[in-house]
Structure formats: structure tokens, C-alpha cells
Image 1: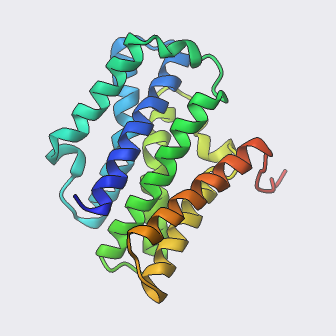
Image 2 (image 1 turned 45 degrees about the vertical axis):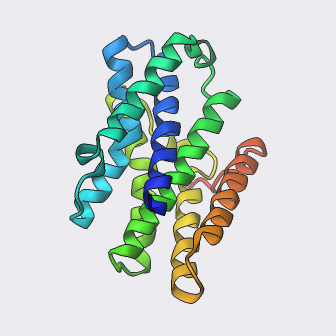
Length: 202
């Protein structure tokens, strides 16, 4: 199993859960919950693969759909929707942060494999990390989290920059990627708990 696939699986599991939390918080029915979870977990990867001209992982690998379905069923069985009334609860933040960083890494690695330049790698990292969440929020008529949350998209961009620099100047191996993973997690958690925000125009 490649590093991209590992990052993809972690991202799918985490974003399927965060999508479930958002759907439950929005009082969607069972079909709406599954759609929101699928969009959150797979949407960004689909957009990325289309841009790269790569085989769509979400549509060519049965594991992707099985992971989302399993997460939603387990979440419903254990009544995890009781945690979904507060979007800023630690359960949502942990799941969403794991998905954000994992997908940012997988997006950047796909860009590196496609021999994209700096801008391409960073953009793929951002799109993969936030694309699914944006599609989900648009579906439920909600302002996308990337536009209002603390350092959300910034974390994905930062991860993409690190992956590109590692590949360009050093060695892009497992331990280096794990360091990037934990740096991304730490940045997102610190930004959330310290309520860091990018400057606003108005």
C-alpha cells in the first residue's frame, strides 16, 4: 500500500465522520446523512483526480465507499449524533483535522507524482483537503468552513508547501511525511484552541 493510499484511507475515515456530524447537526434524514458523508469524504479527491487526469480513486476502489458506509453505520449505532449539536466540539474538531491534514498530504503527493510545479502541488493539496467539505456545505446551504474557520485552508496550503519542499530539496520518505502530518495536526489544533484567524478586510 502506497503512502498516498494510506493518507487517503485516513482522510476518508475522518471526513466521513465529520460529514456525519455536520449532517446530524443540520437535522438531515438518513439519505441526507449518507450523501453529506460521501461528499465530505470523497468530493475533494474526485476533483483532484479529475484535474490530474488520474483514475478516480473514489469510483474505482470499492474500499472508499465501504469505509464511508461503515463509518456512518457505526456512528448511527453508537448514537454519535448526540455530539453533533456543537460543531466546535472536540469530537468534530479531531475528526475534521485528521481528514484535513491527511487529504492535504495525499493531494500534495498526487501533485508531486504528476510532476506539477509549486503552485500545482499546493493547489491540489488545498482542493483535496477542502473540496468535499465545500460541496457538502453548499448542499446544505451553509457557509463553507474554509471561509470562516481558524487557519483551516491555511493548514492545507502549509502542508502542501512542506511536501513540495521536501520533494524538491530533500527526501520525501515515510518519516518525513509523518513529521509533516504531525506538524499539520499541531498547527490546526493550536489555531483552533487559540482562535487564530487570518486578518479580515472589513
